Length: 352
Image (cartoon, rainbow, N blue to C red; front, top):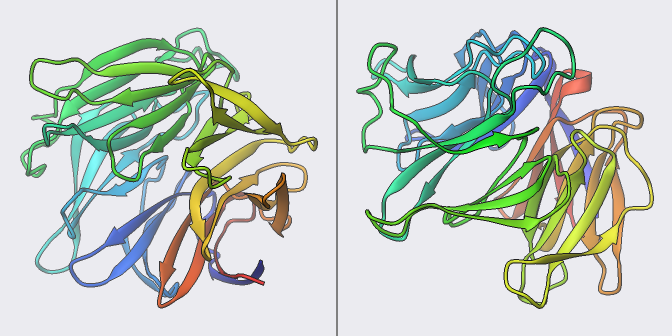
């Protein structure tokens, strides 16, 4: 593929989280910072439109509330996986009539890292949120207190919640060591969560009286993962980064037994601190867009060429923390939060 890069922001140090936003006024996306900095809203062409807030930062996840063109949810004050996330929480941002945004607490959740919204077979909407750990002894690399997975039924209107009236959460999985990766199915019917024990699939209850379905699909320490049908055989593969903040890319194909996956490819090149990951259609081709934050600090495309998997370098020395892909006006674009170079970049991708 061919790529054309345009830097659309250079004043968002440690830019990190990305979320698409189909607003009541225009379609675009939002980008937020890991450290001190704003949540900024962009048009699809990359024009910076407004700051939803100027800080304080610590945003690991930012997403649109389903069916709301005027409301977002984000993590708040997660400043470090090692320490500084004791005050972390999930908050909402609601656009007022005068165009300003109001921030309200949805729920306190120390060390909350990733979250998403799923929909059960009965139509019930659920928040599913993951904490990377439970506490820290103020030392780097302390994993003594593992994280967990929490859920809550989401009502239609989230404006009712604030610091004194919070959404009630239920823990459905404790002792989730290095609970980091999170992938939501395109139809929101399940989520994949990556931990030191492997990749787990979480399926919401199908009815009022049923339980969450939790299954381990891959037994290998996994930092992040995404799912797509890379080889075109009608079955989704899972592409993984291992171990935690690791250096190894691999692809897993569904095995002969249901809900089992077998490794079919592993990248021979080690890439330090792999982190960014997305999978789906880019310029008509199914692939994964990925990146690493140390050494080469590359933005990558991983695809199956009909015979084997191959890795293509899109950009070098940029250090993306997260990436996302969208189509607009017949073209495909990659948004990259290039954390290590403090830039937000928009890449137009075209097939050769």
